Amino acid sequence: MNISEKAKGIIDSCRFCWMCRHICPIGNATGQERNTARARALCASLVVRGAQTSDDIKDNLYECTLCGACTNNCMTGWDPKVFVREMRRELILEGKTPDYIMKLLENYFAKGNVYGKEICSCLDEVLVDKKSETLVFMGEDAIYQSPESVKNVAKLLSVANVDYTFGNLYDAGSSIYFLTGPTAEALASAKKFASYANGFKTIVVYDPVDLSLLLHEYKEWGIEISAKIVGFNEYLLSLINEGKLEVNKSDVEYTLQDSYAYARELDDPDLGRRLIEKVGIVKDMLLIRKEANLAGNLIMNEYMPEVIKTVALNRWENVEGMNCSTVVTENPAEYVMLKATCPEGKKVISVEEMILENLK
Image (cartoon, rainbow, N blue to C red; front, side, top):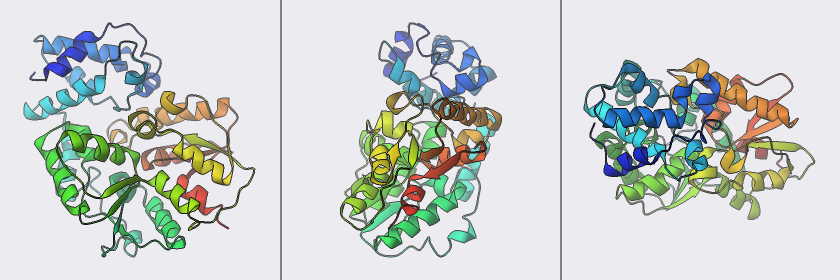
């Protein structure tokens, strides 16, 4: 398998020390050793040294959420996401991609999204491509899997009298990058989005996974965006601080489900908490900030739904452990999965819903 020397070095640097076993959300959900980062590194090491790429190894590469929890806890500082992405790319190039992944890719190229869905007609009046200086980019998960998030963002921006355009014409490349790694197709999607986005002065990015891609991978790929890029949480804070959104402060307790992209990739786990402090009281659950566990992945939910459901249920156990009641999410994937598994007596809301319910 033709992977970079960097990826091989990361594989070889793994001491198989067991430190990452407790933190992988998929490993915790399945209870299988194969889903730990150390086991995945061992399999990768065998393949690099000439072993046949079995179906089990191929499947194992797609059982990784790329959430970086193992990277954050690695005592020797290695990053398994690098070799996982490169090995996914090589499976594509060698024609060995699992059929269930090929189905998602076929959806992407036929329908413009990996879910193979049409945009909900309930968004017809919202997703209007008009001229403005501000692009609000909701991303694939929100547009196709959580239309209520799109409508709530539109409602909130209307209250703030923001002149904006919802960017649903192009995908930023997050989903195809997740499935294929750094392929030419992923870069082509990114370039198309950048060409479109550069027609705006400001880009407000709703999903922190997309935000991380724009701020990190685009630079590595040499793709330039001239517009100012702002995360949705930061943008909401600015609207509140500027008085464009007037909110009430209450004694309601809110518990943030940290997005791994905000907490680990963007190193900014407190934006969501600062939003909570504007309207209520922060009450944290177990495993937060950089140690936060993932609560859901909608792409993986397409091919391993029972495992992803268990991932969300495990997160609810962390909520129960601290007697929390209202969970606030920062991205649509975790919003959808936590709502689908929400136990009686608990509540899931997005950051925009939290602000909406506390407007003056």
